[in-house]
Length: 472
Image (tube, rainbow, N blue to C red; front, side):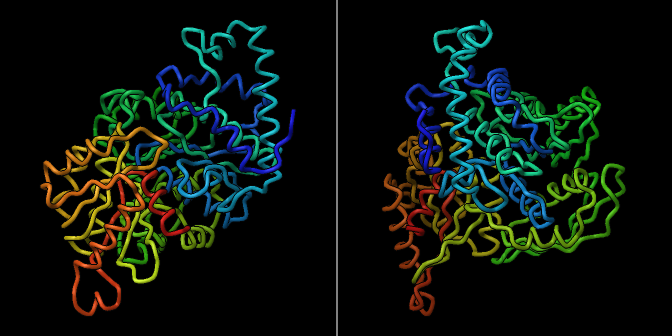
């Protein structure tokens, strides 16, 4: 078997298991298949203690915050999250940096050996494996991109001798490929209706899938939830005999100050036997929005449960130096109007994003929007349209299926066709949005190259495409 020489070759090989024409089906998600792969790799998910994060929104921020604080405390952190914005290696990181090419390639060689040599041998001799991995079987298919990417992460963590893993689910929880973990603590962020084809069409169904990451006797840190979701989680922790640390009852935010430079706040924990006593903490995060303060609070609670010895300096330092692409990130360039990109892709996350955007930059800006076909664009149109003077609808990348024409019609029906434009090419949409923003403000601001603010949102994949326009 030929060895990999470059990390890009490893990820190219793994990406070959993406089949956009066939698409994903519910049978594409089988935790038993991941368990077979993990066994063939001699259980790399057990190489270090872990923290597991699920939820509909904010889980990427929580994952990055935990990694940053653990890194500041001196841990060798393996971080797994999705999607990536600029580089696919963002999904599999060593702290806030990439692993070396040697690690990616060595892990890739082991992964390829498992898929091309060990797995076929097992499929030939074991009927259970054959039913799981044979595309001809009623409930089987070849290993999926998500399973192989997750296993690649675990292999990288083991080869790099990481001493902690911070792991975000890809979708759902119960059947997600990351759910082979037995973490020190689990975190579940806010639940919304999402991926209903796979997770179910009610909040209770989605929450049930997310609750699948709760492990017997292991604490759950839970963000504020609606009653339907909260009842599901309360029942699951009772069933698992797992301590519940529910954010609204455990922690309090005060002195919240949101600026274009980020958010400052004070975090206080109430008496909770699962969290070591700590005085109120004054903290700063270089990402704007109250929601980021809430995400940080979840991360800190989990951190203090898993590693109570970590001090305040590591918490402050990790958060202060935090960098997360496409989370209310400001693009920079010569003669640029304020241009923010954010990966908000659900009605709730879009509401919070627009609230922060309008608080900092005012109403009447420019919206550059694109979303995948499985998103509730009608709900998001109702939220967004009243706040913007001009709306450009575009294509949110090519990784997921999308129909910009349908999104355009939905937004145009609410905002009017004069206010709404369809520009399918994202680079051209960025150019037109910036031009409109510059021409919409006269006087001293325009002379300095400024203009009305622009917000690009609706999908992480769109944020990635916009980012390429500024980074290339």
